[in-house]
Amino acid sequence: MKEIVSFFRSFIVAFSIYSKIPMPRFEWDGSDMRYHLVFFPFVGAIAGAIGIGCYHLSLICGAERLPFVLIAGALIILFTGGLHIDGMMDTMDAIHSYQPKEKKLEIMKDPHVGAFAIISLAVYLMLFIAFVYDITDKSAWYILCSAPVISRALCGLLIMTTKNAKDEGMLKAETKDSPKRLIIAFLTVELVIILALVGLLSIIATGALIIVQLLVLVFYRRMACRQFGGMSGDLAGCYVCVSELFTAFTLFVLGKGGIL
Image 1 (tube, one colour):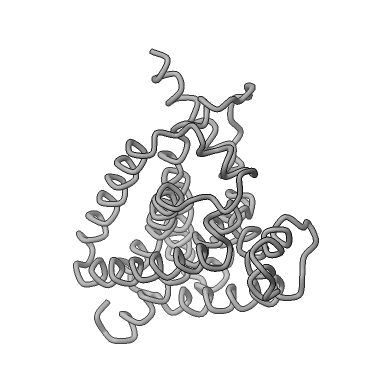
Image 2 (cartoon, rainbow, N blue to C red; image 1 turned 30 degrees about the vertical axis):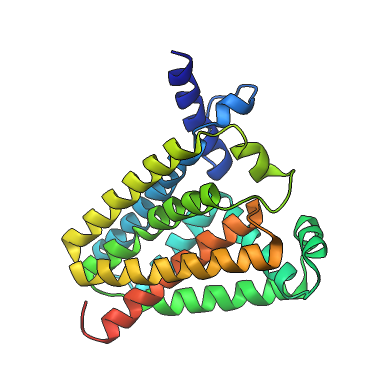
């Protein structure tokens, strides 16, 4: 019974941390966060649903797609609170400081925004909009809207299989009491389910996404361990952004190649 309560509370914690949906308030402790990463992809599913809703709204209105692409992006950022974009900006500031690991971790904790954070965000948004705007096929758009689920499932697996960069901080607090094997099993099942659904739309796109995302995951994990000594909350947020950008890029390339 205690584990069931902990599981339910972890659901509330996950949506409290990773979304702006109002959730019941209570005092958290370690047991309340034991399973919260299991529900991380669920937050992504709602973000994907927002994207699908905006796509169909653009079809109904018969309007230009660009405004609806921008609206979808804005709504998703508002829904998530921009948490992952914040992580990406902090990470880019730290990486481009070219300082030792300890100094990079200090830079990520600094609330001030550096020049490289702004530059990286601008480049990221321009690339993402360019890739997404050119996706016109309905199936491709549905696959794109699976990106928030895929990125969060993979991010959870990355967190669970990589040591923490520091012995304090949000990520350490969130994962120290988590049953790693059970969470990895849940996240793997969720990832398989979303990829199976994508496979119903396009086997080729699914295969391409698996290859690209595995390469991104391996490269990112190596980068995090080499430059920061492991994972942190900001690095996890940055990974979500990078993973979603490469999903958009993959679909863009497949579309240009006439495969989608």
